[in-house]
Length: 572
Image 1: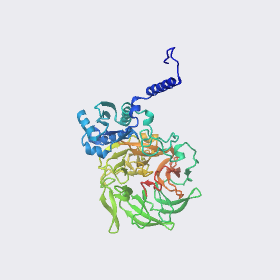
Image 2: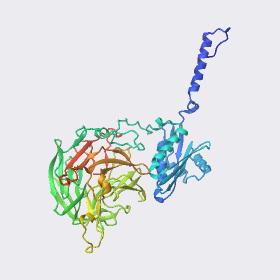
Image 3: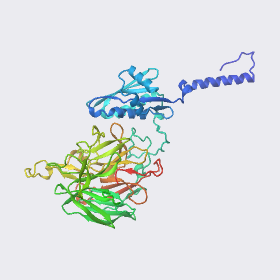
Image 4: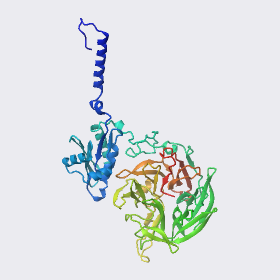
């Protein structure tokens, strides 16, 4: 501390000034210059589409990297990004030099410009990024990683830019950067994985059974009694127009109607198809627009498609149409995503014809209409449209139980590493001309296994679309292609992260084979439930003892931002 000469007497006024001086010195030393000068000044940055060097199938990475970096660098109240349409109009081509980048920065009127390239060589990816500021300073960043690790590498680059250029601490970068209040954080369930790179940094509350490990009788989770048969599929809806939903369960050649009463599945009616009919899948759709949803069952008779349609009115089934020579399904079709009936003929000397068509009624019969524009890998059973802002992706479950993602123009973009959509329902593949083939033993026959349902789902108007899909799990199935009995499974909710399908959340492990699933008011209590239809797995020697069990999880949708927002799902 500064001392006074001995002959100078300290007065109260001199003491006051010394106190003020010391306070100013301490405040100045404790406050970083940048924060002291303009901590609250709003700055703007622009991320340009990255140039992609590699096969055409990876061209989508340019905009994917742009979107991902913009979302990770946005800092509400500090750094805002320039809208993509403005960037596209102002900078139509990616700069090839720092001089061109400076011109682009000046044209956009931003404080920072982020641009760069991605190079794909085999299964390796090289990422080169540049951050240019208004003073002409260039901050380069690079990473070389396996292609599957590109997302974590982008996360690392975003963290470095946040810390070194934007002066942003990691805990600040981890906070949700939306204009709305963040959802309250909840304890993570060990089997509910929220991807750290996903759109929801703090999990939303779906169901206590999903978020916390619980017993079978935990609140919010309901388990039906075991039904004495294995099942193939299930739909829920108001088929008779009475304002209450019915449950329709499909078996090999039967459709059974139930509703929930006193916490049990109570039978309403049963329809038995001819004994030689093998059912494949089941859907609900008001085909003739009479206000009643018809029950559409895709089926085969002696390896040829012979689908049929039922009504369920006044507590009984009525056959409306049968022997329809089409494999049939229902999808939501862009751009308005209304549910449409689609069909596909049997191919000549192959399982499926080359095209999937919208099914229309002509001369009183259901016939193939307009062909859908789909990748060649698609068939009537294995695809869905996943909405993405003003565009969409086409997701296809391939013969290896992998999900392949295509752009709206059918350009291949990615494939999942994990297996999804696996089922035990197989169609024999005929690989020879009629009458010329040789009989094969069961072990030598080839089968195409119809994948489980792919369900686009959105829990609120302002939330991203997810894809609800099953992940049946079996160690034996990994090594034996014909082993299709799964002792356990999970429901996964996937989202498109700009590069691949990534997990948003999943249920905890379910014992048994997941057969079907969806989102509906199963209990008729005005609440939406996640329902999962399961075939029990009694062990290797007990396949004939399999039973059907229905599980429901009551969803807490209090986090839906708009009052009255209905749950938008991929099924009617």
